[in-house]
Image (cartoon, rainbow over all chains, first blue to last red):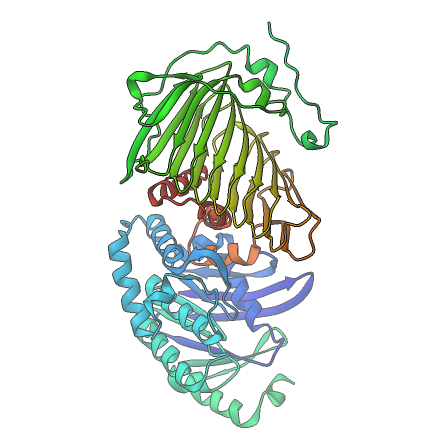
Length: 247
Length: 359
């Protein structure tokens, strides 16, 4: 599904990613772990097409198509979803209005019929309920006045509504207490653990991986993947820390 | 041929104005053609309707109710207001008048210039809600005198639409004790505007609000010059303006609050915000406070910025196209000013116009 080949990228002229290669097949969940500054978030932003992140070498394809040639909204229409580490507050635009616009733009791009307001609200309510987010909050401005945990839940509600094929989740677990972590983790499993979907789960800690069990774990350090393995690698990291591997 | 005595940019109140198109505009021959679809708003409290075509009442498509047509004498020193003449419409409501429903006035301009004066006089406790819509392509010039008695309430909403030309509106208002005036303006379309307002809070405890959303593109100009005078104690005033400029367009808002000696417990607030959609566009914001009393609460804020790049990327990463993302954020930006429109159906119509601006 997603094929990253020798990806190099710079931010403000500074090299951050220095040759990342990684393949995600349908049905797989990959975790990327690594110390601060190793390039985890940069990888997420480069894949989603954030302006200011410049690819200097390498190739990324989504279902065989050149991902790096696509605009951010085109990547979304192709089925990619980025869960933000720091979800953005947008005063004056309600969650419902935003998500209906987004979903219908994606459906238009794929040649599918748009959802009516009523159909959309049914989908939104089901996802909000599943993630324990009050529907009243969905009518409020995007992330404005939301606590850190509510913002992360809202990211997952959005993911549930949009129902992507490929999710890149950038530290979706940060800022969550244990209960919220379980709700969010179960949400990821429910929405994304499917034979035709794939997830790139970027995280610092083992604790989310206890709920969302990865098929593969990669350690990112200094802009490169320095080690790959199965779920047991995450447990080893939890015990031993990054020190040795990143060295 | 008429010689126009127009103010020049050398005068402070006119420094951002461009009236240079007016002499040419008045030579444009009016076609007199009225569009089939007139911008009436469907509403629950349907009231009088007035259709003015090039400044003349179209009687067949109007129903006056309590509105009178004829000589209107309003004194003014304003250079454009002075041109408005001594004819127009007037609305005088007393305490015992049943509210006439929503009064809708549509001004169609088919070329050249037309001038009208209006007088709105609400006696004690009278209430009225008026929506005026401006369409067409010539120069439409209006002078409006508003007098509100004790406890009277007026909601005046204005939509400035149309393809080209110029709209100049000069308002002079005086509010009595506990009276309330809300003037909300939406300027979209393709016409240049000059909006002048002088609002005097002459009775204790009066409330005045002047709000507007100005949207400009191409080489369009919107120009607002507003003064609210607190002459007696305990008055409240709000000025809320949102300007959006694209291309080489310019929006200018000069808004002043004056608090007279002795006008204690005045509560005045100004919020002037501008959004630049292109680096080549211009926003001028000039908030002014002139305070001669010592126990008042006055706040003012003026900001000019661009669309938030983080918000744009967030929207786009969810599949919203770049154009839709800009439209969503811009609409949200002007929403504050349009929320001031009191009638729900009218407010919806204004929001729809704002949405249509991006289409």
